[in-house]
Image 1 (cartoon, rainbow, N blue to C red):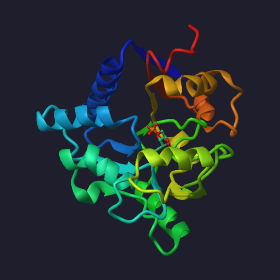
Image 2 (image 1 turned 45 degrees about the vertical axis):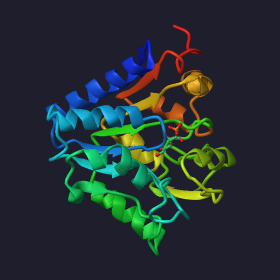
Image 3 (image 1 turned 90 degrees about the horizontal axis):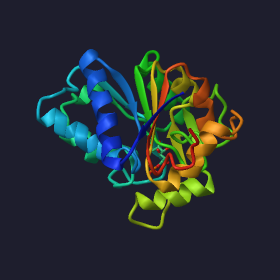
Length: 240
Ligand code: F6R
């Protein structure tokens, strides 16, 4: 795993955005899988600014959502699709037909997941990831193996409680749909993004604990082209 450590949060945002812009310029047809939550939002804002300044374009690209909560109303601001729209898609130039989202309201969730994987059609060019405090990636909670596919999952208590930061009510989601570890690990390139001191301990464990499905983020260490983007506070417990 490559380690990219930035001295400040603005430098981390700028660094990740610069790399991302370059990837998209090199390959305008880039097929990306993107997370939501709080971690990527400042990066999405920078990227949206770059699109508006016409420095880069999503017009030929494709974006797939990484995961989605179940049991929330379609217009709930905490739905991943709504977060992604709010922070990136509403301000970018991606054609709607090149956006693919996991739909937790589908009647047959297994068929929905298979259709999503079929739409992806092969390895993603780039997967961006945040990390949960328990080491989850997407909604691949501890116990998710390297071969796990896109599927319905029950959320762990810590993830349920964390989701309170995204919704404005007490009905917290208890399950979701997620791209599996298999599709993440098969991607051509993976970036794990982490900022802030609350992520320092799980980042330390991701790098130092034994590689195990008990800590899904540690499985990224076997990916041949994975980079960890951390700001100084998230990197605080890493030793050189
Ligand atoms: C959300 C997702 C989650 C988050 C993780 C960290 O689409 O994939 O795995 O990345 O829970 O959340 P934040 O960024 O809010 O700390």
